[in-house]
Amino acid sequence: MKKLIFLFLLVSGYVFAQGTVKVDLSNPNATLYTHLYFLQDGSYEPTKAAATIKGLRQADAIEKSIKIKQIIDGRGLNVDFDRIPTDPDFLDTISSSSNILAKPRHFYMPFPHSMPEIYLEKIGTKWYYSKETVGKIDKLHSEIFPWEFKWLKDKFPTLYSETVFGVKWIKLIGFLLLIIASFLLYYVLNPILFFILKKIQNLLIRFKKDVLGSEDKNLRSYELLHGLTKSIVLIIIIRLIKRFLPVLQLVKINNFLFLALEIAETVFWVFLFLNIIKVVLIYYDNFSARTHSKLDDQLSPILRKLFKGLVIIIGVLHIITLFGVNPTTVIAGASIGGIALALAAQDSVKNLIGTVVIFLDKPFHIGDWVEIGEVVGTVEKVGFRSTRVRAIDTSIFQIPNSKVAEAEVNNKGMRIYRRYNTELGIRYDTPPELIEAFVKGIREIIIAHPETRSESYNVEFTGFGDSSLRIMINMFFKQLDWGIEQSSKHKLHIAIVKLAEALGVQFAYPSSTLMIEQFPDKESISVKYNTSSDYIDESIKKVIKDFENMADETDPNASSIPDR
Image (cartoon, rainbow, N blue to C red; front, side, top):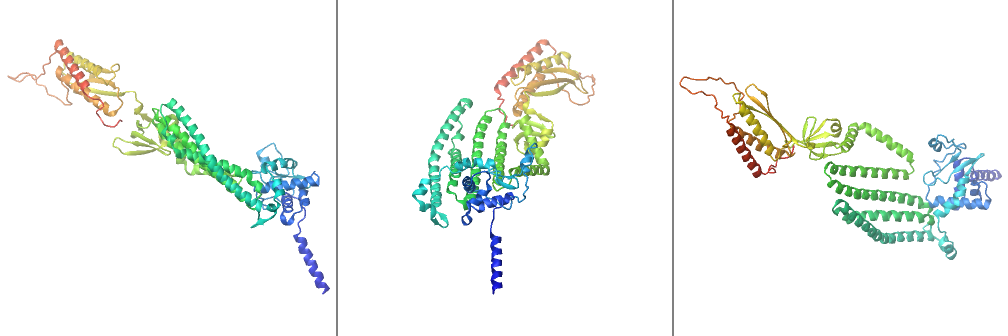
């Protein structure tokens, strides 16, 4: 019986010894566990927790260790002991890698992103909270807990001792009051901020009217103003909640609450920047609408998609870091993913670069008649990937922007004038006097034409063809519209035909003619020309007068044929 009792006591003592937690400062993991374990409700021994702080009196060390625990709980910081190193000679290589000159140190930062002021360092063979951390504890504690409400604790001690569902009454009441205050603050700040933004909007519209000459009706949209107002107010409220939430010391749910608040704040920041992008692009749209270039109008939707995509991507990356992922890892992953995506979609990247080149160089505008390689037509749209060109037969060509950027672009829409070049062929037996008169008459027709450049033209007898004498006409039309050009040609051609008829000049046919000078008892078939100078001058004057009358009566804008 004695042996059984001895065996029972031995086993019980062994189990008890196994469950006993001792002060252990041999590595970062052990030091943090010692500090936090001995400040829990079921194992509260602050003197042992104070052993993690070196160089202070015990009372001061206890106070500092309790404040560190309160800071960790108040900020909702999660201590994952599985990730904390257990190596007694742990070296911080991450901070050293960012600075080539820095040597690796024996220190560990448990919360490098949310609370970098708190970290451990190795002194001798043991790990303690660093001197810098201990020196900043009071300041950090006062920032996180601006009010301790000692008077409330002294007056209503039961609120701090009694619990409901495992939560102290004071924390539950404080949490409910914080929610109610947030709702009240929203309904107070929302109309005030909306009023301020509306005043700023009116000032901007008035300034915009002075600069651009008209009011921007889009900026009067209440939806846009309400979107800006709600985003700003909700960000302010979340910041205030994050400021006062640590006071409640909701240890078990603080981590979840802070994570939810950080995510919500990021989402509202995304909405705020999206609304700001809308405002900026509204101003840009109104500015581009008053410029001659229509290519600026096509840039607006591209910028809208680009900036929206960037804002959303940055917001998503930030939310990922809230779950404990290292920002450097996220950025590196995004960069590697971007490179992989670029390699997998080289054509798309080329087209995107081509789009940038098109908008920077502006080789054409929307509505210009262009020749891009073998494609000829009117530019209708420039998108992210391709440029849309409508041909004269109304078919659509989608040309990748990379090819547009590399191709030779003949922009006929950028012409100052439309050049017209043709040759007339008259009979070989036309007398020199009538050739001169015919050339002179065509020149005067060009000068009298209201839609031609009278200071720049050429009408010359240029040579001898197979069956005609060649007269070259080289001139320019002022109107760039294709339909008006055809109407101008029509009037020019009619005037030339009338001039030839009046002078008796005949146009040659591309044929061979067998000439027999004289049949017996028949008259000669040779054309008889009237080369009298008076007759020539009178004929030219009559044709020019008739042409001027015709030009005055004809509307050059009557054509509805599209430009090309």
